[in-house]
Amino acid sequence: MIDLSGIFPPLTTTFDKEENLRTDKIRFNIQRLSRHDLSGFLILGSNGELVMLSHNEKVEAFHAAREAIEPGRLMLAGTGCESTRETIALTREAAKAEADAALVLNPFYYKGQLTHETLVKHFFAVAEASSIPVIIYNMPSNSGLDMGAETILAISEHPNIIGLKDSGGNLEKMEQVIRNAKPGFQVLAGSAGFLLAALKLGAVGGILALANIAPAQCIDIYRLYNEGQLEEAEVLQQKIIELNITVTRKWGVPALKEAMQHCGLYGGPSRKPLLPLTNEQKEIVFELMKDNQLCVN
Image (cartoon, rainbow, N blue to C red):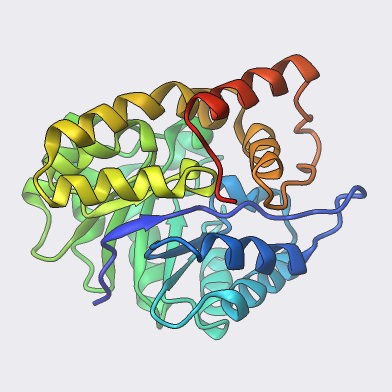
């Protein structure tokens, strides 16, 4: 069992102008963000454009991240693919790269056939084949499939499945999972927009896109909650909501990369068909960042 408590940025995957992978910039961003008291990093989550990369590029990214992540911080690796076979293969590559745990997004293309039983068997097969712990990843806004509490709880029964990253924001479902899951099962908020609410329900932390550009603020919400300073935590939570919606929900990965570039991190392009922000959109993002007194540098 590993302790998932704390704040984790889901790293972006860095490309040059021709959209070639830049592993040196992955390492650069990790080194810069490591100035903050982060519990670790997620490589190849949704913000890492997992679905845009070839298998070999994914493996390269895993190794680059591991090289840069300091001892004492966790490396979580996104390994969810459409087939069980491919997910197992990528999870094994993550283990070879010395990831501490695999974050597995559910398959979603054949939605009509992805029943409760199918999803449970898929996750059990991955967990059985994996030498590292598995974390369930529920991301309905991207996958179009929102796993219910019953399914998540059934999946969580496997001894090698240790937690859940839930980006759906359904707090009633999150509470049901936290209340009924096996002892030691750890739930992480998947968005800074409901971090404090999730912590109040019993979540142990968050994997938050906003932690790439506002790590101190995300860590402070987590810290203030744990110190019992709820009013201060609530003020900070409310302050970041608009920025979080704009950067991570409204305009997605291109907006996050633009914000990172503005902070002195490496942003760079996203892979097409994702398009860069317009100048008008950039100004809106930069103004919100100014209002929140960001950045990391």
